Length: 153
Image (cartoon, rainbow, N blue to C red; front, side, top):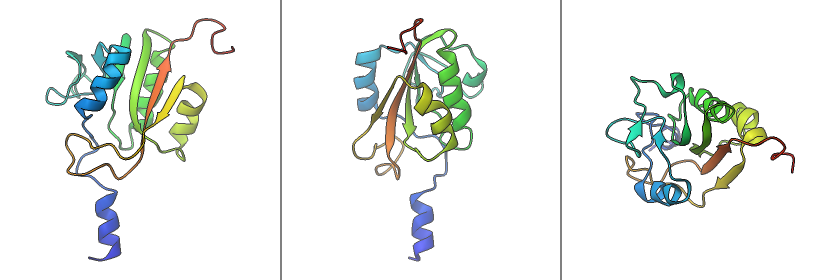
């Protein structure tokens, strides 16, 4: 196999959706107690209340404690921005499973300056719809609503 074909296979996907593995979600849900999966399908939802593609979670008001595993394509910036800005409004917390793309503009614009917590995951996540571990590192990024003066301390 030519090197270029092998590289293309490692870093591409027929879909930009990577289904959250239940074992990872259950650990986080036990800690955060999610009420809404903001970016899901009826087949891969992790919460009883979820926004489908048709409902477009980017157009919805996020409330409470939300789970987000967004599409990892070009629109990921929009989802990360929405996660952050939602905690300035109605959402208390948005916990995100993201590719740890620390060299990207969206990481530097939203994650670094606004995340309350970043947990880099050891190893590669084995997404439910993948045959092997992800071809990229992942992180759990938490955005939360801050009370006045809390972030300064």
